[in-house]
Image (tube, rainbow, N blue to C red; front, top):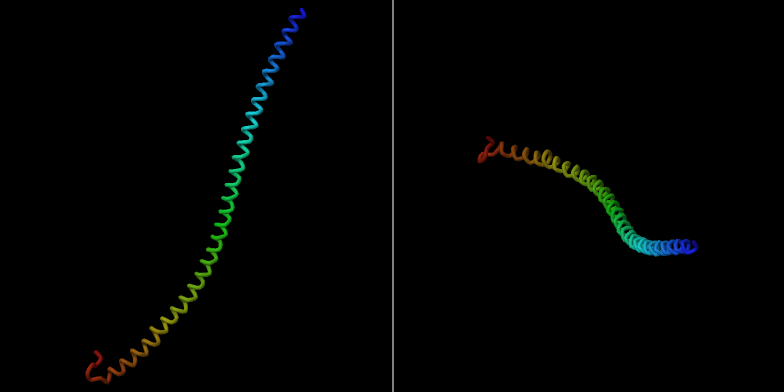
Length: 115
């Protein structure tokens, strides 16, 4: 009887040792995987931080360019208004005055009378 129980105890101890060894191996494997995953996570986090920084810089630059474009449009419209005013003045004031004088001179001309 005693031998039978001793054999069962020995079998159980052997199974416990196998389970313990399997657990140690599994634990080491899982810890290695955690180390690898932690390193990959750190790399990904660094890449993410770099991407966010780049995005923020580009957004800021885009905002600055938008402000510059608005300011440039305002300057353009102001300068074009001045330019159009000067063109109108030249066309309808200066050119008309020259035409009027020319036409008056041609009225009394015998070489090139107006038609």
